[in-house]
Amino acid sequence: MSLRKLSWSTAAPYLFLAPALCVLSLSVFWPALQAFYLSFTQFETLGQTPEWIGLGNFERLWTDDVFWQSLKNSLIYLIGVVPILVILPLGLAILVNQKLKGIHWFRAAYYTPVVISMVVAGIAWKWLYDERGLLNQGISLITQNPLMETILGQLGWTGEPIVWLQNPDIALYCVMAVTVWKGLGYYMVIYLAGLQAIPPDLYEAAAIDGADGWQKHWDITIPLMKPYLMLVSVISAISAAKVFEEVYVMTPGGGVLGSTITIVANLYEQAFSEVGNGYSYACAMGLVLFLLIFGLSILNLKLGQLRG
Image (cartoon, rainbow, N blue to C red; front, side, top):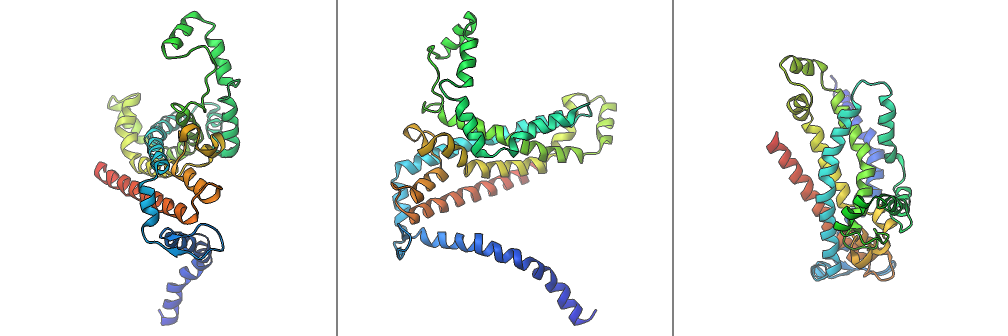
């Protein structure tokens, strides 16, 4: 092989990647570097010259109660959402992987929420949670049964419509339900791709050995699906850590007493609202969020290696 052919074969892949790398550099890498720099400066409005203040923004974060509340809510979101989005979609994928008549309609039904805009989904669920919404109307119908009325009374129901999104104790969990509803179909499809790659001969051999029902899934499906479980756990953790749309649409401003404010929602308020402290302070929050997501990804990968 001539030197010219060797150099062309070496450079050709990078030439094909060059346009995409240029776009990524202008839209992702360069803004990220600018945000990293601005997090160490005082930069409140556009047109202002950034003033270097070192760790001043991070010292402000350390004493900012709203930031710690948003961090707490983001961690609750992680702990509450990620396990559900790792386990439940796998069960759905196993169910829709059966060879049954009309199973494609069930797959489409479970996947439909994925293609709905989060803004539309947030508005729809906000209506459901309204005092005169479908959920409260359903509870009113249920409580016409004296037994159900007694049970709900023991759980704290007072007979008045439940203010789902205005109650600081449950508002965050109501928003989490929307995230779970939207994500189930997406992660189900990832698992479904993995299930369809498992040879049917393995299940037939397991059936001959006496494994049946969920036993064959425990012995065959779960071990072979570990790469997909790891992928879903990483993706769902990243998505939960940077949740924003449903919080902003359903509970503008972070909800009552900041009950639903997350790091990204707090970052948005600081950068783009009139009461915010400026772009540099928001960039400092963004850097903390990046470190949080990076740490979660590394932790997931390490745990996956230990389980493997």
